[in-house]
Length: 391
Image 1: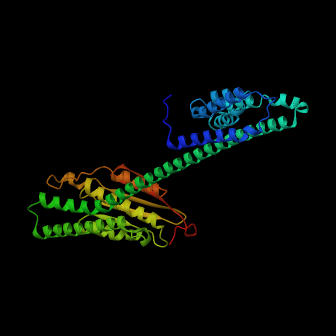
Image 2: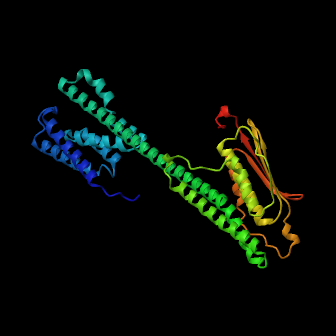
């Protein structure tokens, strides 16, 4: 494994523990009971071994278990190794797995049963010194285990925070994606209607150069009005994007605005028949707005792909049931007129967006060729006012 360089904080901790071990040996040297007088050579050798043991603490990060075993075994003969042995046992308990900690702790407390068996025959000072030694070892192991548990808890909390942050980023990204999709649908629905009118009549002026002056004037007026409405709708959409949520919602189309939408189509020369909407209670704003967008997009598609064809719109339903929206257009009248305006191409995303709108509103939309043209049919839920849907 690649060795990780020791940081300044690690060096400070190691030097601090080295000073602790040396200070402990110096303070406890006078209280160590010794049988007889071993002589100055033994004491000098004991002090040298203790100094080497203190210096060996700098190796505790690389070989913690080996260092603890050596210091515990040598400490049974060298009295000044008690401090370094405590540091080594603490390092094992704080950094090594449970199995290694258990083995080292077993080695440290292995002499305890023999001490308890010999306790009645020991002098009071030796018994007190031995009890203090094992109590210090027990406290060292406990402190090391506490440090390891605390470090693991902090690591777990940090991991949870990182996971929570990552989850928040995913939710924010999902919200941004949904907002972009909603903006794209809104732009498509709002601008597609007026721009398709503008394209149809501009194309009519291009292909029918011999049209009467009043027809050209009427088409030019529709183009101007469609362009004005498209710019107005674009400003509204941009205003929604720039608006502060605390300012409240901008006005949105509802089911009651369908007659105005149909009147615009008729003024542009379309043959449109509207049945409905039902009188009485109005559906929730989301349902009404979805129904309006479905009719708007279906009229736009009819102008693009079946110019001149008759369009029949039927909107029916009642509260606590569902709202049904049907838009049917006959085959294009342009097939019988070779000199007429060709169909306007589209991106093919309109019906996909409408199906998604209906799904988000809790409904369903189906569209496809019919026996005598093309049919778009949608079913939207209409909850009652008691459920929070009415107005």
